[in-house]
Length: 156
Length: 436
Image (cartoon, each protein chain N blue to C red):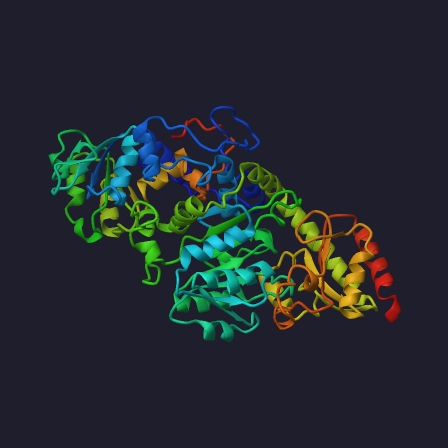
């Protein structure tokens, strides 16, 4: 299996996202990501102690405060502020840790992976989804997807 | 849980020319790229429409901004230039204009080679000047002249891989170093070699522009242009507030923060294309895609024919000089070996005995080589730049740009090589008779 297929599987297998460090301001990338995931049928739990609601959803003060299962955690927090993250992920039985563009922390990546958590680092969840499932191609971006198989996705 | 994950395959140039950018569509499975001849696209509901306008969802709103046929063309050129993203425009000049005006504001400055296509020369010295953007044109053979021309308000360096019509080659890697030290992007017009012969982004350029009308389309049927970005320029270095500060032109989005390595393309799309409107028609995109499919084999033959003709002209007793970097005698031969190892391109220039008048007569006496203002057609094209493409320059500017009075430019086509040589030979014979 190649990297593209592994990401396609990830997006098809897991549907429940928590976004930690999400902003209430609509122009911010974290808000963009939440909106995009909601538009594409994913469940999104915003996490930020400063807000009650984000994107029309209840916003939780922490990961552990979410009363539902979470499969993917998308992280917009500063890379140096993630010391206690992996134990929280394990407690919540999270399957994937997605560290956004610029959130680079090799120690956290290694710690999560050695505990069986799949990690994607320094990539944007919205851009990668749109690269593989369509949308990003409409913006002239080099998706590096080469295939003769008919698209199964009706783009929106 | 642990799956063996391999790297994605890195496909070859020819495969990319045929496949990049197209996933056969869900509705029909059409193998050829469909022509989406439409001005606009329906929204699912008001929330979907708002998401598209806000750029929270990627998709199509209006064909001035994006079109699914054009986006295949954009991605395909981005792919073969080894870039991150591309934006197609209605012509090569539109591509250069939006690239420069997306970067520069009133009071900014551009350093450019002085050996440029006449239209680009006019854009830099006349049109942009009206908006308060100045340019210094420098000697393309002197790296020092580039670095000496950089000012505190310089925002870009602009060159052509192969200069038109002097057929000079610039040391891209060294100019890229000057740009890096100045903290500004190097923009390269890569029209003449196409990415098959040279990929400037691999040599340190940040942005590539093309007139796709030329070898990319390859058949003289459709105008088009494109801007490709590498995705690695540090727009947050303090010199480009238009990339890092909220955009008054589009919802106060910060382009670099929001779109990262394809922020420049998004800025062109949402600020330049949306407002100035030089979009490429989907039908032209289709024709340019047809051209791209055979680009590698056409370029091989263009280079082979041009090389043979250059050798023929070099031996011809009535030819004063030939400029083709593939010739070992050419002053750019070493640079050609470095930057154009697969071939020195399909364009050459030469001068016959007898000056301006002999140049004009040569063009009049041709049988099937076409006298017109274009290059990169499958047919062989000739022009006398001093009296046509570069005639808006004065004599001194022409000489500085390498446009000698007798210079004839040939864009060598794909006809039978012996026929092309025959037509050139018979015309030289008639044109320089009185001087022999």
